[in-house]
Length: 245
Length: 245
DNA sequence: AAAATAGTGTCTTTGAGACAATATCAG
DNA sequence: CTGATATTGTCTCAAAGACACTATTTT
Image 1: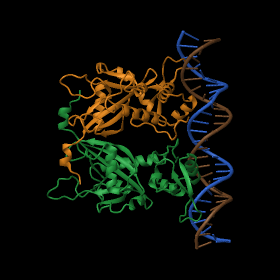
Image 2: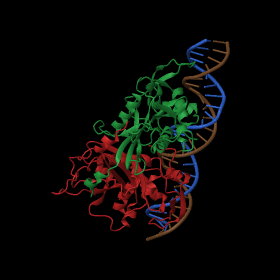
Image 3: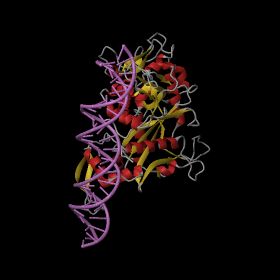
Image 4: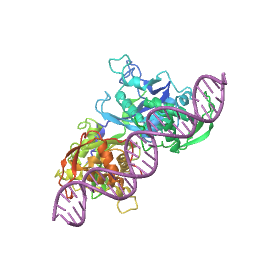
């Protein structure tokens, strides 16, 4: 039924891309890398444009797709155990000018502070951008859209993140532990783009029993807030309802 | 940064697999195909085992991954516009004995009755199996596990379906239109494997305003039930809460 | 004491579970 | 008419929104 021999000759290229989110300056931000500028010797597509971190699977280095995504993320951020979830895959004949290609996209949540701690990893061609600003880019705006179909992948990632924030504890991965409930609520509000009622928020978070207290913290606040840590960093908490309104 | 030239030589194989669900005989069932038996001339892996319908992307036929999944589904069921959603991708060095491969998995919901209408499509090597029975297979059971990592892909598909049934209108795609609310509730109960309160079910379905009445139907029932149709077959309804308990 | 932030209480609303009651149709 | 199925009503409960109130700490 399958024809492996003839198929191998026209096989699509396989890549992995990672959408790395953080919250910085009260905004949802995404890590982008700038593609090499055009030279006489290279034929790299989309020269000089910004793109999601990613590239070809390296069968010699990568045990599987997730490991490949983890490697790309480590190379750009120095972070070893981030929250990393598969987003989806995109494959067609035209997304890469070099021919039929398919990319496996992942999305990751990290604390920007955590990344700053890892010196020497960031290079000049890596930077944070506000997700909403990037999404509004078009060929007519000053800042050009991302390379390949990364504009579309980012759009899907933002929608997925905003959707899951409504009913999961995902935003906790955007903070360093320990964190306070006001800090966590602020992250929720930044990602969702709207305020949440304080009382309802606390009732939900503390009632779900996925946080453990670690003693009061000393922050810039007047009254010392309680610090919390995730009981289980492997899986986010899933609530039975979304926030309403 | 990427090295396309060297990478092409070791590029992973790209395939698409489809998990096709239906409800038949009061059970969630999945469509499987039997792989060719071993002969002296072929080197096909997993000869004689059952597997998810799928195979290599054909760049000459398939505009993109979704089209490829739709083609596989059409070939096995004769159905043109099913519900088809991306499930995820699986890729590593060992899932196919021929080498590093990555598959893009989709899952589809169809009415078994709709498929019976398309004669001549089904072949002897295609059959429905109870999803839960297949999931319980191991190397030690009489029926052997599926080929490749399809056991694992099916597991993920069933979990995803059962999860989404808790808060979406997905089961409607398992029925032919028009359908009645008791029929729809029955499909929900079969997929979830537990009863749902009749009153709460009707309040949720009718309150969400995603169904349109199409007049009372004549069924085997005593009192004639109201028939319904989806207002929008493109996207399922997403409810703000899961069913509880 | 005042200001600012953390945290709690109260009331209302929404929608689900439990389950009883009513409506309609085939025979 | 009767039984089976469809549909509605009532009561209770859980959790969220609105928003006022109390608690703690720094200055």
